Length: 266
Image (tube, rainbow, N blue to C red; front, side, top):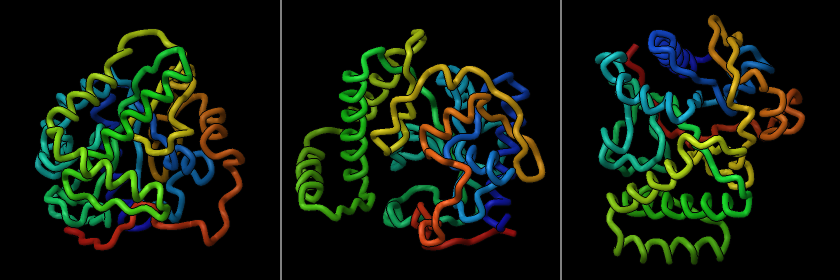
């Protein structure tokens, strides 16, 4: 475990403490859950830590988290940091720097972070769900463009799309986009549907998830502690990663977030 991961683990322990105190459900997610199963901790080359919460628990967490976290950490949402444009939260460590290429020109808190993703219900219609997800992705891209995040594309079609979205961004306000995304996120709130999603994700073909996966949570060994994870982790990890117990080739083990500058307060 490297120094960055130690800071991230400390934040995850705080999330775990708060969730236990207020009886909130959560699970480590994505590569963090994969790391718990394959490495009993961080994937050695991973550069982030992800946590997911059912929407009901996420909303409660957001209301209480900053007070519980104290002065050491900052709860970053689009309500607490005006140029932050993602439909999820980050916990940032104050007096540190973890600068990503995509946001290097944006005036936001740039401390070392972990991600907290809400899990939202989708409809029972997979075709409709694909349309919903595409709409959210487009709205997110417009927000990123408006706030000067760096978006790059290697294909002509995507470059043309970015130009179109940049043009559209002049005619729709930030608040209006956020309201549209929120409306979509809560559309099926409280309904017992077959599918759920991380609207926070960017991998379109992996955003429609079997709702039965997010029902039971168990403690999993993670480095020198235990964090909560999905009881159905095997199905979840196979869905996202296939043969998840086989590590990728060495040349695929990369800094996925494009971190360009790091400073600690230690």
